[in-house]
Amino acid sequence: MALYPPTTSPHTSPSSPVTSSLVPPIPVPTHGSKGTFAVLSKAIIPATPIEVLTLIRDTNTWPLWNTFCPACVISPRKTPIPKCGDLETGKEGWLELGSEATIDVHMEGDGLVEGSTRSRTQGLVVTRLEKIGEDGRKAFRIAWKGVGYSHWQLHSERVMEMVEVEGGGTDYVCWETFGGMLGSVVKMMVGAQLVDRFGDYSRDLREHFEKAKKGVET
Image 1: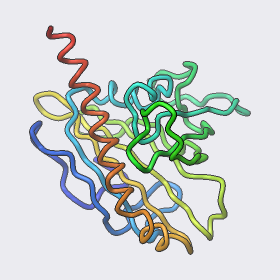
Image 2: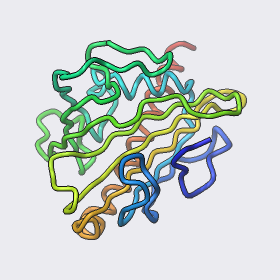
Image 3: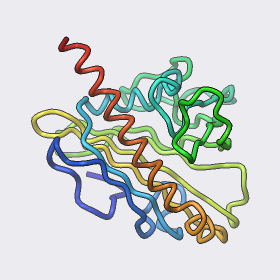
């Protein structure tokens, strides 16, 4: 199913808890298996894979649910938006293949607190936006790599996969692999924080759709 498979088996139950951990490097599109470590998080989300992908792509919504990276500014494109199968393209504020952007990264869990200043900015380029899978289940992948520093010093790339679960819902798997000379420093200094924040991101996604579902039911 996955071109860049995570190191553990997927969730299989809607009641499975959100998990997040430090693991050995997991292959990513640009850097392959080169790296020092990865952060891996997984959750079952009560929505379809395309709904989860849409929420992630639509940066206009990030301030409403995303405590890890609550803001994103997409740079004007220098090239036409490429087609990605039958995925929707051309919407303002949506991440596309090749999009360049700057995001706010909050490491202390305070991304939605008004006036919060404990954050840093990170440049990124979207490296994958595609449909995946060959067994009939709906599944998608989006990935982006960090930019703004020398590759030999530090490189990172995040991959998110959304796979349809039998009976409804999405098996969401996210990992980011870090490498370069400073990879071990990042792991030592903020590895534990990254585990917490990647877990928060997965919970934020799940809670957004849980709240939406309750709103429909009521």
